Length: 226
Image: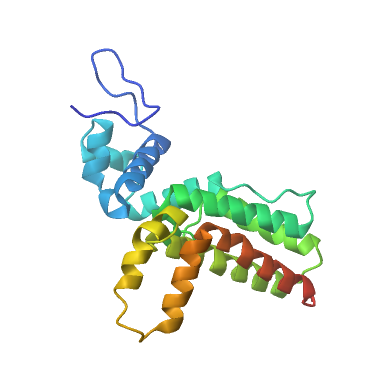
């Protein structure tokens, strides 16, 4: 028996409630969260909603239209910069919010800047980011430099965190000793020494994000803004 997507009620008689674009996109997002983008097929979406795949095309044009819509849903979950906050606070909050959203939807990093048809949440997000930087005195060129640098760091960190096997102190303790034990003899003394010290210190990879973000914001603050 097919289980309807969250938030989708059924009419009397067990028939699915009327579909709309958001219901289809939410079902697609749930599938992507469970199995990545490859799991998000039209057939799978239809099964999740209890309808034939062909009926979805009344609400979405094709797979690219779904990807555009998913990207917009993800942008809609990211906190927009506060118009009253100073630029560093705005950039930090947005970076931390983006990191949290991408942790919930790790597949989404591949979509963030790839869509040729951005939706309203996507456009609002970019406009708010550039507005926060321009209000702080950054020229259009410098605001673009800053935005690109921050996004390269945020998305790069998300990509690495998605696959790194020692992303938490617990994981480091569990696999670190095995990994170090596989190093041949004394051929890699620095790698071995650092690994042992990190395990002993309870190193948390997650704290690296704040460390790198501080460096970037400090560097941007020292640059000329025009």
